[in-house]
Image (cartoon, rainbow over all chains, first blue to last red):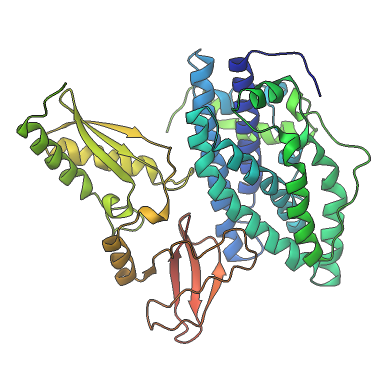
Length: 257
Length: 167
């Protein structure tokens, strides 16, 4: 696919914000389970996974701020942008729903990002390669954890299987966006900075299909992909997420811990 | 060509010794040197530069550890500077043999090198109970009390214990 050419540095800044926003927004969603998980072990697992994601977001935002060179740091980028300026995948912002929805969302994302970070760890950009080298190990645990739950619920009781199947039907149309390419992804793939997301689709499908086979689930074809997050168009729930996420900085501008 | 004076080498060693004694705040039986997160200490233009690698991206202890190393260096009479090094990524393989022994004595099973495929579902790692030595153990949770640990239970002596995850 050919897209209009873009400056590599500009593309890198844009991609760092996309990846950082994915981590921050999904990390925030996962953290919403803290104190509400069905069992104590999950009450520890959820904040642990959220911490991984928010830690990755911090590294990405800090680097984005350096690339941008306008003096913005991680807090400015995380808390002081409007909804249209966030570039996260719509999948990352989907509401938690029930535990089946949350675990499937995590699996869909992690099964994409684990190979993404593995390839990025070989990046010509050493800072990004360093961030990726940490993240890939963390995401492998997310695949394992969420994959086990998807199997347990999909191959569980009548009710858990029904809820898991509902989650598959609702969330699968949001997965197409992960593989979308544009001028930004083209420029970065060309420069050997980030992998072409489309090239990771077959591995993602293999990972999901292997898990779904054990979970008695079928991966549906996507007739109407849900996209828009990468260009700043979000679902209506996103505003509510941001109002909670940004509350402190908006109420007490410039506050620090 | 730069000449490293004996004093400089001695100062470097003293700075390392000071930084290396800092314990991990979450697993206080081991030091930052045992864990391998203290990568190096160099004297650069009179400043003691400590390079530190975080264990996990979101490890809440990272900033505390950096602050503790900075304090230890300052107390030893150095002007400290901490540099966070992300690449190469920290791995549990960097935990020293001594560190692993300290973990075991503390009741935390040290990571088992290359024995754990993080992609395998319902992982089959055999983890030996640190209390009674039995290998009949089961994983209760992949995510334990800190990001670096998983929670296990011994089916023989029924005691729960932590396993330091392999990454």
